[in-house]
Image 1 (cartoon, rainbow, N blue to C red):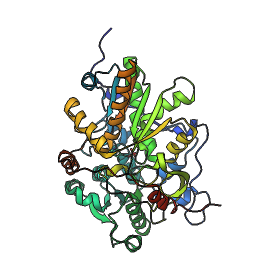
Image 2 (cartoon, protein in one colour):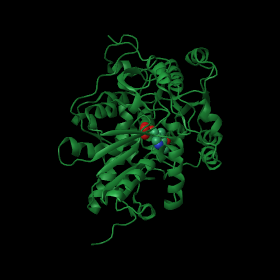
Image 3 (cartoon, rainbow, N blue to C red):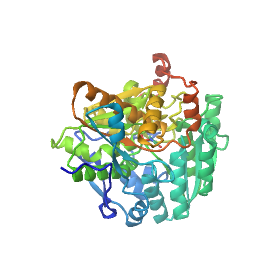
Image 4 (cartoon, rainbow, N blue to C red):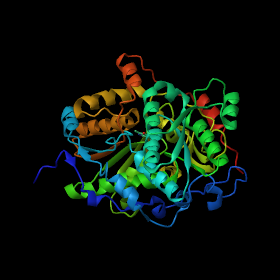
Length: 456
Ligand SMILES: *Cc1c(COP(=O)(O)O)cnc(C)c1O
């Protein structure tokens, strides 16, 4: 038999024409979003002051399994997609494992991550609706960069609230965002009412995605012809990210393999949900039974140690409530180096799948173990991974080593969501032996969980 190549590429024509709506096949649908004040299920018109019309519709859509990718978005995708599915032969050899390891590599665009897949869709729908400006938050900066690229492309103004500690750790990220024409404000700022309130409630805090979201939403809802865009957590984002899994599914078909284990890092859940999408469909319909693992940082363990209940998506309580695994909207994680995974909650679809047992396992890993895997991977596979992605690498390596013990030839797929060129402070810390692990105590977590709303 012909050897499977190192890189399994699809042709441009094979880029999917539809995103896949996982929600339509779930055993139990997700609980509805609730209005932050009335606590009643939200309607389309509640969402429209925040999101563009089409995106609000996608957010609520529980009935259409396939949603067409607009031609202009698909054409933009052609500039950097299909992304390769890579057979990690060198990693397998270095580990001496019989496992077949594959990764879907999303770092091959300037934003350096999968975020561009949703950014371009969101900017497109804004342009179609005649929206003049978008606001957003960014943690590590990948989302801010991706949306700046997308807005630059369609000629839309963009204001980015960037989590303060990331802004300080990664000045060059800010530089890239500004180069694409967007403006950057460290959050929490004194520019918004909610920012001033958060600064007063949590003095000296270094910000979180939750604080930046509150600020971005406030500006979007109080400025004419402006909307808000979110880079993770929401169902619309997970929907756009299904392009990752759909491409991966086609590539596996070409080579006649199928993943036994599918691993992804989970911040707000979009890349993992996207990667899992077609394979979830197989699992729910009894065609196949892949084992799914979500990996999160031990410093922000929303699935492994959080609570499955309604919570606000932001610290300032301006966004709808979602039923999800959460550490509490008031939980401000330690300033770990995986900025993209520092979110208190988890996408509702992914949360429900985990609750139902379709998503088999959530695992938390420590920062130093993650960087050990990251530097190892960089040496053997050549790619310098993002700290977020390296959470998935850690677990993929651990699973491959288990196969080495048992002699099982399992097929392992993980999402390599991005590159780490802007994370050199973190890598240098690790190289100098100065990186520390942070695992919150039960008491600290309890404080965060206590900020979740009491529902009756
Ligand atoms: C944002 C980000 C993540 C986490 O976000 P999800 O919504 O959970 O996918 C992971 N990896 C990279 C490189 C990111 O930029």
